[in-house]
Image (tube, rainbow, N blue to C red):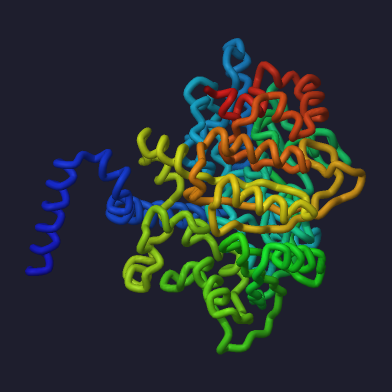
Length: 515
C-alpha cells in the first residue's frame, strides 16, 4: 500500500499546487505536467481506437463496399446546402483540432460543415501498381498495410497521422529527389464539386482539375478518393551518416548527393550554421545483424539526437534501419518539437518507462492548448517549411540563420516538374528544389513573428520559392499570388462556379485575410 499512498499524496499535492497557481499557469510554464499525466495516456487510447477501427474495416472489407454510399451522402449534403440557398461557404466537417496543421481553422464555425467519413483503403492493385484510398487514410495506416505485402509509396510524408488529404496541400520525403512531391506520385483524384457532381480527374481526363487540386486546400471540391503509385519495398534502408562542416561544403555535398539517382533517400540535418549531418540511404533486403537499428522502438534515442552523435564524434557511420522504422523516424519526437514540450523526453529513463506512449497526438495538443499557449507559440515559436531552388540553398540557410536562428534545420531535396498548377519552376524544365524546415524557438534577438516571417516570405518569393500552406502565412493577397501561379486555379474557380461554394485559398489560409 505504501507506493499507492505515496502516489495519492503526490497527486493531492499536485492538485493543491495547480489550484494555487492556476491551470493556465501550469499549461503555459509547465506544460509537460499536463502532457505526461493526461495527453500521453489519451493519445494511447486514440491510437488503440483507430487501430481497432482500421482492423475492423479491413476484416469486414467494409470500406470498398460502403464507399459509394458514403460519397452519395456527401453529395446529398452539398445538395442540401444548395437547397438552403448556399448562403455560406462549404468546408469539411472534420474539427480543426484534428488536423496536423498548427493553424486554427476558425472558418469551421461560420461555414457549412460537410461530414466526410472516408478513412479506408479501398484497393491495392498489384498489376497496375496502384493503391486506391480515401482521403482520411493516414501515412501510418498505409505503410502498415502495404509494407507486409512488399510494397510502399514512392513518397511517404513524415509523421504517422498525416492523411492522404494532404494532396490538397503538399507532402514531401527524403525520396522526393527522385519522385517529386506527394502529389506527383498520384495518378487520379475523385472529387465532389460545389454543384454536387462526382468527377474523376487524371493527367488525361479533366486534366486542368487534376493539376489544380494540389495546393488548393479544399477550395475546388471535396476529395473523396485518390489513386497513388506504389513501388516494391525492401526490408531495410542502408543509411550512411556523414558529418560535414562549413556552410559551403554542406551545400556542395547535399547538392551532390541529391543529384544521385542511385540514392533512394537523401536528407540533411543542419545543427548550426557550419555543422550538418547528411544522410543517404538505399533499399536492401540484406543486413548485417550487428548494424541493424530499429530506430522507432520506443526506448531508442530520438532520431535527430542519434544522428547528432556522428557529428559530435566526427565520424561517418552505416546502419540498416527497417523500412517502416525509417519512414517514421521523426514521428516519436515530432521532428524535434517534442523537446520543447517534454524537455527530458529523450532521457533514457523516461524513454524506457514512458516512451511507449510518445508522441502525444498533435490534435490533442491543439485541442488543449488554450488561447494563452496559442498566442505564446505564435509569438515565440516558428513552424515553417520553405521550398527553394537548390541553387539558392547556401543563401537560404544564411537567411534562416539571420532571421530565425532555429536549429536543427531539416533539408529535404525534391524534383519539381514543370506541370501546370500553382507550383512549378520558373523556367520550362524541371528543377531540383529543397525543402528547408524550421521548427522551434527562434534564438535571434530581433525576432518578431509577423515581421520576421514576412521578411522570409519576401526572400522566398525573390528566389522563386514557395511556402508550405499548413504554416502561418503573413503575405497580403498580391504577394501571395506573386509567389503562386493562380492562372489555372482562378480559371477553374470561374468555370466550376466555385466562388459561391468555397473561399479562395488565400482567404482560407493566410493570416492577413483572417484577421
